[in-house]
Structures are given as C-alpha cells and as structure tokens.
Length: 442
Image (tube, rainbow, N blue to C red; front, side):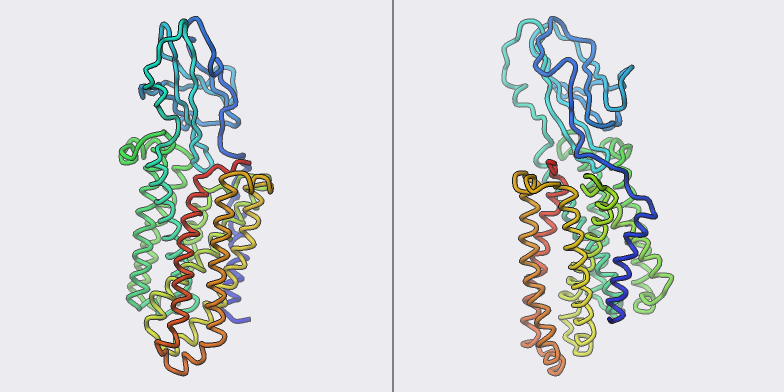
C-alpha cells in the first residue's frame, strides 16, 4: 500500500472519530409541520377570537415562526400560557364578518427548511371573495427557491474544488502550489465559496419568511436569520471561509515549501474540517433513527466527494495541459488510487445516508425526494463508468504516454474521459443541491 493511499485511508478513518468527539448533533425528526390549530382551519365563528393557537410536531423558536395576513401584515407571535415549546399564540386582527385568512411559516431549526400553510376562518356571514386572497401564495417564492438551489450548487462546487484541490497539492503534487493554473483554481474556489455562503444567508432568510428576491438583500433578513440555528451555522461557515483565506494566502506566498510544512497542514486540516462539518449541518443527515451515524456518513460522503472532484479538476485543468512525462508518471497513478479510495467512501456513506433519510423502499419509489435520489444515483453511475475508462487508460496507456514524453495524441483520450467525468459531476452536484431543499417525505 502506497503512502498516498495510507494517508487517504487514515484521513477517512480519523475524521468521523474527530467528528464524534467534537460533538454529534442530537436526534431530529423530519421538517417541522403544523399538527393542529385552535380554532381549526375552516371553522365558522360568530366573532373573531382574540388569538389563534398553532401547535407543531416539535419544539419551535418564536423567531422561526412567522404569521401574516393576506395583505402581508405580520401578526404578533408569543408563547401560550399553559402550552409547551411546540405551541405558539397568534394575535388576530379585528374583523366584523367575512373570511379571515392568515399564512403561517416555520423554519426547521436543524436544516433551515421552511414549511408553510394557510388557515381560514369564517366570521359571521361570509363575504363575497374578490379572488385576490385566493391568489395569495402560502409557499416560498419559486425565484427564491431557484436562487437558493443555485447558491448551494455553487457552494458545494467551491467546497469540493477548495478542499480537494488543497489535498491534491499536499498529497500528490506539491509543485502544484507554484503552478498558476492550480493557484488560480484555488483562489476562484475560495471566492465562490465565500460569496455563495453570504448569498445563502439572505436567500435562506427570504425562503423561510416566504419573501421575494428583494427581501434576500435586506439587512433585516440577514439579522433575523442569524438569530436562528441555521443562521448561526451559515455564519460559522462564512467565518471559516475567511480563515481559509489565511491558509490559502500562506500557500500562495510560500509555494511548495509551505505545502510541506506540518504547521500549515494542521491549519489547513482544521479549516477544511470545519467547512465540511458546517456544510453537512444544513442537510438532512441528522434526520432518522440514528442521527449520529447519519452525520458521520454525511461527513465521509462530503470528504470523499471533495477529494475526488477537487482532485479531478486540478488534474484536468492544471496537470494534463502541462503534459510533462515525469509528472504524469507520478501524479496520475497517485490520483487514480486516491480516487478509488474516495469513491469507496462515497458509495458506502451514500448507502447509509439513503437509508437514514429515506427510510424505506416505498419512500424511495413514491416521493419526490426518492426520485431525485434515484436520479443522482443514475448520474453517479455514469460518472463511475467514465472514471473506469480513465482508470483503464492509466493501467494500459500511461507508460506509453510517459515514454512518448506526454504526446498530445496519446494523452487526448484520457483528457476526454476526464472531461466527461467532470461534466457529469456538475450534474450530480446540481441534484444534490435540489435534495437539500426537498422534503424527504418519510
């Protein structure tokens, strides 16, 4: 077993242990949902009650609950005098007759997913409806949802390029710290990662409050979200990206010598550990019967994907264009072995996550989350076929490419295979972004 493979295996084994020692998340159910309301939805009343009581299936924070009239006015929310942490009281506006409708939304404290609905009460004689209230939406804005998915896609890609790129330079190609292409890729990954995280804070706030894209730019949206648990996680991730600038700056200044420094490697490992953990904390990994193992599996899944995807990008964009025989002879086989270890971790952790989050074959086959998961699995299968073609080239054609000093015609098939693999990986990340905002539907 080579030194590179031993290091990768040690990393995959130690990180879950460190994760558990650092504190695994507590058990969590699926997304927060409304259990009942008093008065009930559709109730016919002689006069407006003083308040409306909403009871959820788990404890909620008042800051996470938002109730609006159909005109967009926010209603005061407080704790019920004799209720538990799962119930809230809503002060209702006065109305003599007609329909009184309110929209409620609640943000799940674990992953920031927004659940919402509409409650209508008939006061006295029903008034004729103009249709304006019926047109009011009780779901997050589609444009905000699409923007949030795009921001998360960019965040996943940036994380993979940054973490995997650093690992590639440290484990396989220290000289890459002085190569302009690999340096530029790491700087771009850092900039996109920080920008996507900051954008996600505003978009997550607008998503949870059923707002529009303009609301995602308002300071009050950021302030409100940062007072919640998902907001704290996103803020921590943003701060870790700031710390990552220190790690990256040291590498850009010191080059290959810094990449071999034990002190710098410890700092890089700490930052990447934090980035991976905070990314996993906004997903569905903690839902299910065994949230601790789900969180560990999610961490291994993210780590394996980052080592594979980030390394693939550096290989395609920085190593192959140089076509230097000695580098190809050392770097390509090393990455092939590292990728094999990473894919093994991805598949194993993915199976644990699928069972943890989906829970049954019926949910896999009959829910939108299950369908997205099957789509991701199918595309991942195509990626693995392209990866197998690349590995076959390494086994059968690498020696010839080295002998011919990186001849372009000899290396070209490997480059095509890597390009196809990279393109399909982008599709996998897009489906992953959709999965994070989808309801598992257990």
